[in-house]
Image 1 (tube, rainbow, N blue to C red):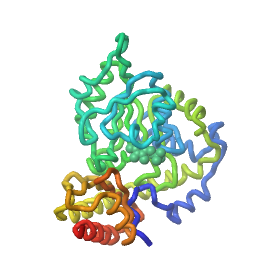
Image 2 (cartoon, protein in one colour; image 1 turned 135 degrees about the horizontal axis):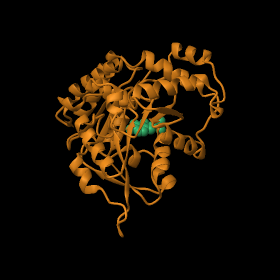
Image 3 (cartoon, rainbow, N blue to C red; image 1 turned 90 degrees about the horizontal axis):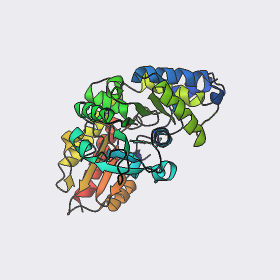
Length: 344
Ligand SMILES: *Cc1c(COP(=O)(O)O)cnc(C)c1O
């Protein structure tokens, strides 16, 4: 079987997780009658230190719901460069909420100073008003970068002072927590609304959550329905999420170690451009130098050799570790990738 490093979403539910799903008490979640969803929502709200939480089928929908709840058409939303909202949501922010995005900073992060110069004030005769600032932690396209928390606090303080709402796209917030040795509540504290995914490193087959004040989450309930994401007996998914929180959180450190060993191996290949010390979570994004084959060739050759990775650009490749790949598999995959890149 191939060693699948395309994403941490490729994991399959374990037998124990399937058991938990099979035996979960369920009800109609649109009537607020699914006890397992209620339990997961309460648990996520409390772990993230927010008043309320809401289950959603996907992280993309969570991000869309937040845009609908916190912005108006024509508004400006400030995000990091290469953010998921701009690159990986098929243009949904423009189509569903009519917002424009302003990408700032570098390497997936930005400073309060960079935010200050990008903010467009309300009431200006020319400017689209900035009404939301969004931080992605960890940041996917730059290689699972953890947003420095002191900068997060500075960004959110400035936004609040300027009457701008704050949103944390924390699809991989548990990875950020493990890598920075902080709780998810600490990482979430500066924000009005936080999104997290159960279907990434935690290994559930689906489900993302939003957490925030009771008012904001009440608004999100309506927009989830408007976007067609209000479901019925989703306790089956919620049970997988609860199981993942109990059993798959502590082991994220293994994924981070595995990503680092892949990065360390690739970094000694002269044709690879990669600083392995930047790899602190479960994502390895590396560039291919002039003497290396291009990304499409590397992806195709790796596939032929039983290793699956994805191209993130003409000369950029991503590999992601997760609970379905062992340390040995990662060592082997790194060897395969290093070999086929070195033999251009
Ligand atoms: C995966 C991801 C999402 C969206 O999750 P889906 O469940 O795939 O829709 C949102 N933000 C980030 C940063 C992600 O990595």
